[in-house]
Image 1 (cartoon, rainbow, N blue to C red):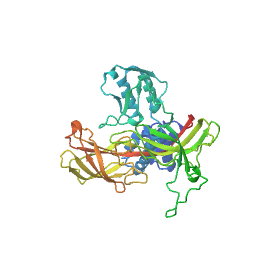
Image 2 (spheres, rainbow, N blue to C red):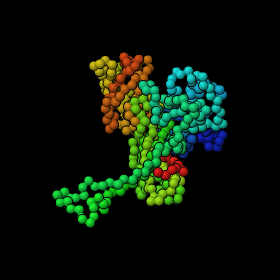
Image 3 (cartoon, rainbow, N blue to C red):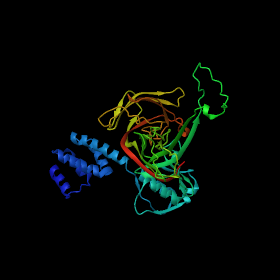
Image 4 (spheres, rainbow, N blue to C red):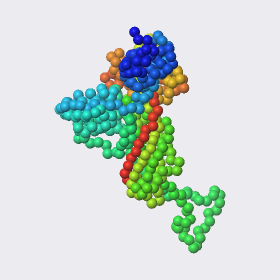
Length: 460
């Protein structure tokens, strides 16, 4: 059996596969600090391939291995959030539903053809062969092109009341006409260019209590010289940043325009240009799975502007998050007053209270995030996710005895203490269902800067 130092030396010398996470994880508890650091670096390089073994290592008997595994999991999960999901498109005359299923399995996203159960879909065949894997957004665009489909960025989460999905519609290959650029797993779209000039007249130019002077005989009152109007101009670009459906976004800093110039070479940068902080999170309403941000890039319109914006370049700082795959599962029968936990979250069921109508149930919970950097903490603002614009899927799910997800809405939440109250509201065929199981997911997070560049745009 190889010892830690011997195994590490073989890895460094290339005589032992550094691509084997099961061999590298034991080295996280090696006697020497340098050996532990080298093993950690090798595992980081493996990325997602190392995660299953690292998750298992959180139960290792060696406290050093447990601690380092937890740190590496957060580090790798965070790095994966800012990398695009790669999709392989290699299909030869395959039914569209089969292709859609394969695409969803690769992306970790549920795709839904709308209208569902239409005979149109089974009869449509797809042939597409891409020599290399494509980033998520380009793969979706390519599929829509060959399969005569289209999508709407504002309609994630349809159909309502079930697992979030990415809806695709029949569209003859139509694609959105928005100027777009892709940056990792993010798609940046230019929604609009806006220019407005306002002339505002004062309601009353006289001081309160002072007599209004009579008009001068040599200057009619209608002449504009009497009024001193205020003239203001507004020019900005409306920009939308869309993450892959697995992600949620929040703006962590001001949009910065680094270059803006028209076709005459004139700068369009506004003095101290800072786009206002827009909504911090977006795209989640009940069961919606999208996440996007809309921000304004303030511009300066020259006195004699050109015809086009030759280049508009900038960067938006964001925090990106997604829920972790393994939920803490709590059986609600007999859970009153008990605390449950895993490596990511801790949940205390304070009270389960049926409402008078017999169809709704209130769950009073206290939730703590255990995987936050620096140790245990209460919830971050984006951790409490119900019918609000925060994430690609609820971090809290409620299911009946058959495993069917039940809709719920948030009655109250105290982010500081982590205490919240939610009301479960069965609907449709499940209207008489009783909540049986609570699932609480941890969140993985990372910071990123989304860069974009647009060229040759009409200047308003």
